[in-house]
Length: 148
Image (cartoon, rainbow, N blue to C red; front, side):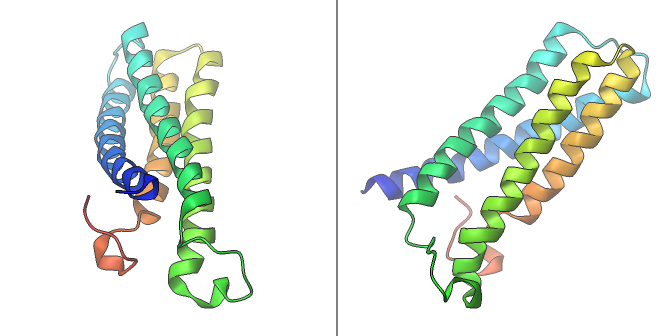
């Protein structure tokens, strides 16, 4: 098994962790926003762990971007749906999602009211999550990937 294949396997596995943590973060933030729940240190840590897993995925993704045979910077890249997806679409959309989730977590520190903290986390994470789901190479998109 090559380094590329190992990284693809790890990258695919972490995808499921991200989905789990993002759904739990969305549920936790929505519940906090709609109730009188306090924004405790433990909740902040959970939101931070979500961001940390996403950043780990970014590091592995950058390594894959460099190693992948599906990433080519040529004149024909944009005419091939597979090459365009991995070289441009997947990479850029995931960067945007990571920035949104990170900004959501970082800006919450300046907010005073707990309800507004939860609301901010919810909307930043929701938009990031939707972008992540939309730009994931699911098997039904015929981009040469499986469920894991």
